[in-house]
Image 1 (tube, one colour):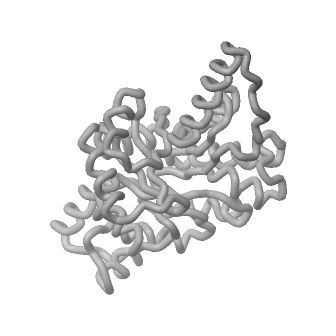
Image 2 (cartoon, rainbow, N blue to C red; image 1 turned 90 degrees about the horizontal axis):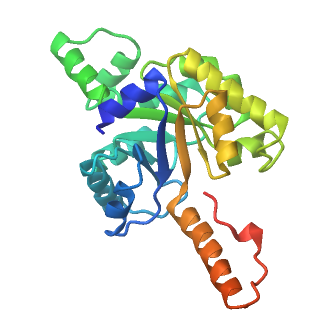
Length: 271
């Protein structure tokens, strides 16, 4: 799948599925390719991935037909440009709360390579040369711009955020959102679920993709999809490895009569 194809599917409301990739191991892309993913999510906000490793990962996954979506460390246009230069098919900006932040990111993602005063005039709505306008518009179709909705102020500003041209999807950050709502990790709490549904429904009504990164059960994931989400990032390579290893080790211990040690559930990795 190309980045343009992924963008078209998301904006059209088709359901697409990815996972968070933490490992930069050169053995990982071949394993991931056969898992039925539509894209991969690479997080540089919470994971220590340097520019060289990020570029290698982006170029490799893109070559395998898995567009890499990169979450940048902060909602900074210059950092977004760096991720795109590395080969990202699109960026996710964390903890967005204002339309002004999205507008600045639009300049970096959708108006490349224009910079400086000319870029500001474009963002302000000034008319530009016909050839340049066509060139920028063609490039914008190939680069995706997503923003994390993770707080009450962001929900309150949704209408203004969704009005910014070029936005391709909203992505809920469930951990931060639950904390902002006063129910830390309360993913079954009515206030959290109502907030998710509001975000999904407003996004889809605006012709923008609606997504969430979640690591829970199939039933929980389906609930979000039934609410209106069409862009799902399921778990992460490290979390899936951890869960599967626990299950298999427990089965082996039981098979040989070995007592299974007590597992601290709080030690489970979530990102």
